[in-house]
Image 1 (cartoon, rainbow, N blue to C red):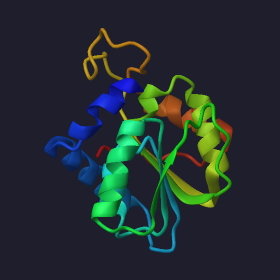
Image 2 (image 1 turned 180 degrees about the vertical axis):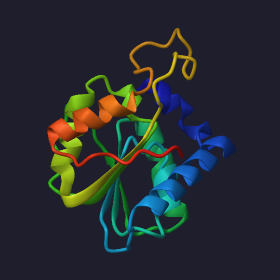
Image 3 (image 1 turned 90 degrees about the vertical axis):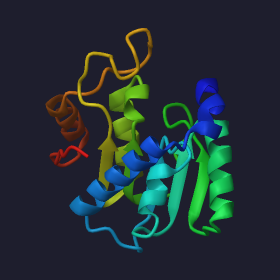
Image 4 (image 1 turned 45 degrees about the horizontal axis):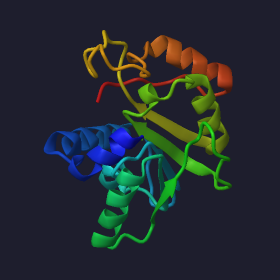
Length: 180
């Protein structure tokens, strides 16, 4: 994750902020969000998506594996004097699960960086409270042009039907896909 540690200080570009706002608006349009809901963002980076949703949700745990991203996030939380956002260094594939369970889990442009999609979906399922929501904003199946064909160890996006089938096999309800 050293690559993301290095990029963290320059991460919050206007394009990335706008993408997070659009995804936050899409989540808000699809779900009955409330300040009583506990939230977990995985692969939070500098927290752009959680900042887009912070006024619509309650306590938030923001997890990432990058020290650089979490450092920027911690500064933003302090700067904005946010009391109900907690950064957490966590690799869900290798680390023990947190004890808390959440009403909503969301992730933005993270899933394609995780090689074992089934394993991460199982972890999300375990972390959700009964009746909770999982929101994944990521790449549709693509030709590799997003990262460039020379970049390895990333999925080239996801076929929506295949992702839905895998999630249902784990126990999730059928997905509702929208383009944000």
